[in-house]
Amino acid sequence: MSTRAIPITAIDQLHQIRDELSVIWLALGNTADMAEDYMVDVREALYGTTNRLRDVCRAMETGGQCNG
Image (cartoon, rainbow, N blue to C red; front, side):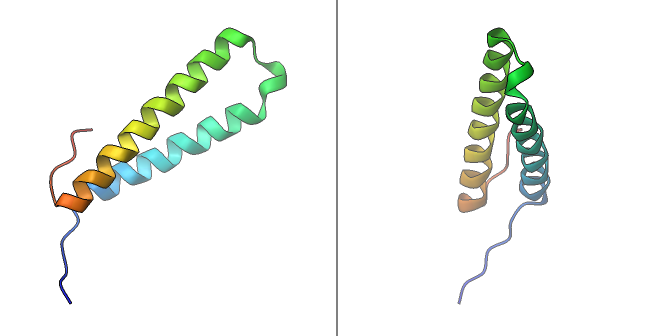
């Protein structure tokens, strides 16, 4: 069985992404109080966080460094 080291920066970034997704989830739960222009900010935050998660996962798969 082969093992591979996961860069500590990837683990730290996964924790940051988890926290950001929690904030976004809470914001989406309060949509009754949101104006439509506020939802654009929430969607952009979700899109950016999703891309960062993809990048961290790729870095973990290849053993490379994260750029975040």
